[in-house]
Amino acid sequence: MTAPVALTIAGSDSSGGAGIQADLKTFAALGVYGASAITALTAQNTKGVTGIHVVPADFVTAQIDAVFSDLDVGAVKIGMVAQAASIDAIAVALSRWKPRHVVLDPVMVATSGDRLIAAEAVAALRAKLMPLAAVITPNLPEAAALLDAPIARSEAEIEDQGRRLLSLGCRAVLIKGGHGEGAESTDYLVSPSTTIVLAAPRVATRNTHGTGCSLSSAIAAGLAKGEDLETAIRNAKSWISAAIASADRFSVGRGHGPIHHFHKFY
Image (cartoon, rainbow, N blue to C red; front, side):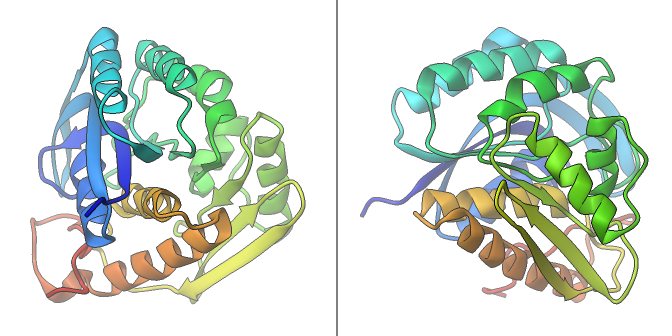
C-alpha cells in the first residue's frame, strides 16, 4: 500500500496542539503520511509561548533535502518560519525540488497572542514564499499585516485584500474569518477568476489552539490525495469545523485547549 505524502515545514509546539504536532495529527486523521522539517522549537502550552529556539537555516535545508530525496511528496505545508534566514533556505530548497503543491500559512501570532515571526521576516515571506504558493491561508489580522493595512471589516474589503495578496504572486488566497464576528465563520477563497464564500456555524468554545495550522494542513492533505484546490479547501473546512465542534469533548490544559483532530475516531 502506498500512501499520499505531505511535508510540513513549521515550528514545534511542546504542548502538542499546534505547529508540527497539529500538522502531523491532521495528516494522520485524513489518511496521509506526514513528514516534517522543523524551523523552530517553542516552549509553549495552552496558556502561551515562553521561549523560541530557532533551528539554523542550513539544518532546515538538510531536513527538507532528506525528505525530498527519499519520499514522494505530494504537497507541502509551510507554517511558522520565525526568521528571514529560514525563509531564504526554504525558498531555495523548494525552488530546487519543485513540489506539486505548496500551502502557505503565514503564521505570525499564536492563539495566545504571542508573536511567532520576527518583524523583519515578514517582507521576506511576502517576497520569497508567497510566489511559490498554490494558496496562502491568512486570517483577517494576518492578511492585514501582510499588506500593512487595517483589518478588513466588510466583504468588499476582504475581497480587495485578497486581490492585493494575489498580486504578490500566489495563485489563490483563502482569507479565514475565524477572527470575525457573527453567527457564522466565513472564509473567502479568492482566485484570479472568482471569489467563493465558504460559511460554517461559529462554534462557541475557547479550545481553538492550532486551528489555523490544522486547516492549512488539511488543505495540503487533500492536495496530496489528488483533490483540486477548491475541493481540498471545502473538505478541509468541513473537517476543521467538526474538529472545533468536538474540542470540548476532552480537557487539555488550562488555557486555549486544542481542537479534536481525531473526532472521527473517538
